[in-house]
Length: 527
Image (cartoon, rainbow, N blue to C red; front, side, top):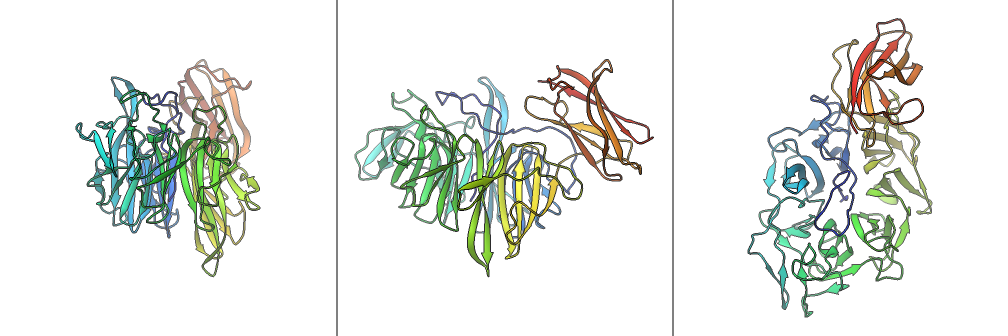
């Protein structure tokens, strides 16, 4: 099970004493029609393999491929999913799950709103809808062993988004920020709140005498802190062992989610790097537990990833200072048996891959399509996963803020093989058409992609950007070799020849190919 972190460039919270910026966009209204050769979105939030089937969560819904990425079925703008983005995905025992969310303009501002969960038992032919879990206003007391704990009921869906989904036999576990950690044993018909230790306790069990409130907002039931009640990630290892990641650390249960022990940066001699735990993953080769651990509210904490090889007793930290989003694994097999595993860490600097027993971490070279040369024009990656087709062939998928990539590796190849890059875009009708997307675009957060096609034997292309007065702003490429009779993509970062970000306004681009009539397009820059 992979951690699936949902998206936003920035959200302001009434729950936390500080702002916790997450990492990617929910709404991506870039174009109106997309090819079934690609997913609907270029913002790929998570990836799960189930044999030859690849499920991906995106800012434009769920996409699924049953032939390892050769073709795609997209569920965006269907009656089941509408236009919501995907916050989390998960799979267990033949059932695929997804949680959805969107932005809404409320009296408190533009808020992230959880819109529920969907699951399918037949590969997406039919979907079952589960409302976003909320409490009745009278649900203010929870029985926990010999204790009756006062709990703040979560009665609304704003700031109540399911960031992660995991499983143990017969149980679905979710992490939902203000709703904390919850579980269901009846496919989401009902949900039970899971009681974790308060910030000032390192463990709880039902026979303890406890005196705290389950609150996610300071001062609601008293002055006690609340960060360990904010759920961001959850990992079921087996029917007894569950890990829960919060804004206050990693919680572990060995009795099916009843008793809990908390690990954080302050209570161990070899601790996690930071207490804000946005991702959890289990390495099946050595049964190690890996976590995306970011700095929370202690100046001594730091952002990185943390791993435990002894079930949480001690932690080793890696990639200090790197803002990770997700963790996956590339397994190696001989005669069907696991022989080793690489850890794939998706970060804002690219996808780091472990080597030499985690002593070194390697980024791939620029991720570009082996056939077309189209490349991923961002370092911000959200997800990575791999699947062994046989002992000698592995498919590695990488999801980024700027598209999806697939790598076919053979044997023990390391970041080497045939790359395929998927960019969602509107189809071009003929060689006289071009367009730019996203449009409008903000140079502060993204680059604009310019798509075009031509039929000319010279293959020499020049792309220039002009301002509204037709003054030259930037020569993006000049006499560059490109492919005829197929889609080509160029990128502009919104900067002029002096590398300065251009002002807001309307800009034009001109594409010259040999002696053909030039192609023109318009770009609106809005920062």
